[in-house]
Length: 398
Image (cartoon, one colour):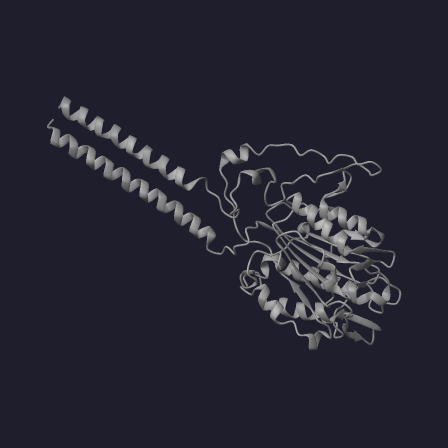
């Protein structure tokens, strides 16, 4: 065969290989683009909610209603019960003074029974303590603690922490028996950061002098908001003459008014929510602290915290195989019961061990694109060379 013919075979083979390599690369980009088109920029793969009512007794009916209202909202927006931890005194629905037994309402019209048929209270009655709350956040729970009482989060988790009750300057009372301070809360969040237990946190608190409770937080990626500033009280919105007590607080009422207008596909942002804050309606001065938060508020979707993430994560098989690691229990401290880090169950959206091999953009991951493309190109060129050689050999024989 003539040298010119051989060169033509080789050139044709290289062209075919290049075309196939470009085609495969474009297909990969199409797949990544399909999964990334609804990406919010948060980088999280799962959502959790911690809802805490720190009050008890009948006259604090509104605080129980506040918490149950938030519970209903995050469930409606897609966060499952497995990812909601609720701490509630739960002494109102069946209280002897409740003329509507086994119900809790947040409106004098009694349009919606918040207690309903499907309410899961994880910490009930005297289990609602400062110690249990801090252990929940930091993961320092005893080994006997059931999964329903564990916050099984990781560094890809967005967490909504809501608290309501009676408070003062830099403290919040727990059932009129003890207090949690702003320092305690800041330290708990710092432990969560050091243990990589969150991606971002939204901390919301409805109590008197609420804004003082987030002044001692110094951990990154935490957005905080409260119902009233220093020396100000937070007020109830309205009462129900038949029930005889206030049924919801003003701050929570107006936050819910915004959340009731959105669904899981909503593009409403945290800035949209904060822009609705009106001291004239709230009878107090609400606050927002965003200096620790890295994203602009007009790019933070409400569903990044109040809803459930809809993104899909793809990982390499070898990453999954290398993630089989054991989690050591936390060391026993002097004078304290032995505690352990929570094990990540199959129900959780992502494995803690796989996170060490992921990029900062956690949402979608399909290997190393540059390396994969190079390997594909080399493989196709080699295949083309073999094919060209076979054609040359066949032509020579003929």
